[in-house]
Length: 160
Image 1 (cartoon, rainbow, N blue to C red):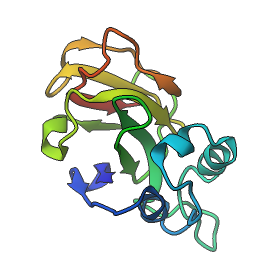
Image 2: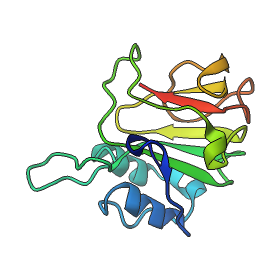
Image 3: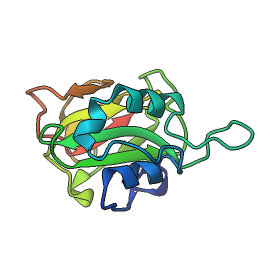
Image 4: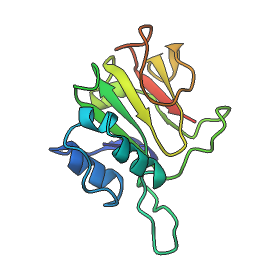
């Protein structure tokens, strides 16, 4: 899991279920066992979107650091994944950048993304080069296949 609000701090988990429990601040503890099962599990995706991936405090606000903004899947949905979290919902319009991650090599995930799913009102743009250079997708929502042009070519990401 990659914490965007903490300058890309990364934690590893032995199971996808554990990663999702951590990513949601304990709000979702019964996620599917695998990333592949999660991408097609409508109930899980609805729950993740309905809470914006965040654990709500007693006042109803989402606790900082517990909002899933996207799950990026390596080499189709059957491969490993990275969960990216933020400390706030994306603002909605795709004219601004809410979060960015400049170099996927630092988390061992460059040139591997084939599928992605977005949450927290976010759209994600995938870039070919580190720090947002080269060929790029537009801001897209998913779950969806990234497309032949960018399949296994992403090295940096932005969320809006």
